[in-house]
Image (cartoon, rainbow, N blue to C red; front, top):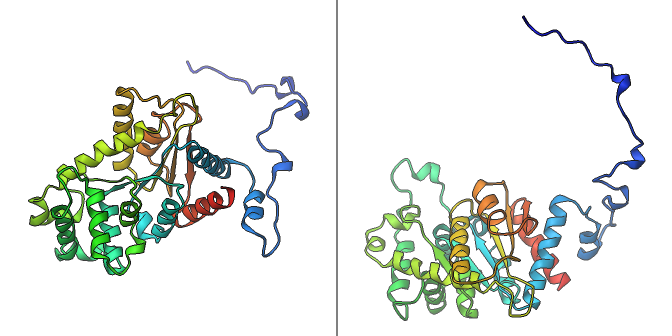
Length: 320
């Protein structure tokens, strides 16, 4: 038979004063209202110190601390960073010495090259996929092949080869290129391909090139950068890895690079990581801000790149 229940007597509940309860919100920390025409720092300090604001502030502090300790700060960049016009921000942070290395997936490198040469990028895939013209432009794969062919040695990675070739050919929008800026400054810039995922892979001249080999060199290079994120001897401050807009590929690369670095003896226990993206994805959550770091050392800020990256830059340069 079904068990019979009676309504509980709520008058018997044990209660206590709200004054004895701990709270997550305090009215003294509510948002302040800066006036019209206020400066950035006043506005920045007016933000309520919760969730995304707190994580972004912690990221700013971590980057500045890492650079003062001469530890690497790496931006791992998905393609949308370029496609929404944020390349100048990344280039400026490298110029200022606040970012010391960049890691790109293949699509990011493609858009970086096209912006530098043509000032435009990103086709409407829903249209071009229907008539077979998607990814079939000639100039982009040709540039990649030329860049690799003119690389100074067989040990030159893909990112450096592209950056050097851009600086040598000096296209109209050279200043907008992340890879060219890194090459000019002598900073590590790696490009990590997953063969078959990028439009240039469909072209015979790329298929016959050493694209995969040069990307493999870049993987070994980024492993070296990650290993260097360990604190200097006798110090405690580590480097910072910031994943911006890569949902799968670069979080996977980072996880493997951490494994290699730790296997070779790097102490990455105090590493700080962050993920900035429009959505929370599984692999950045696990492979960037979860598994590789201690609890509380991974920071997540959800938002559009074209909002978050300008905020991050301004906060860094005003706080430095």
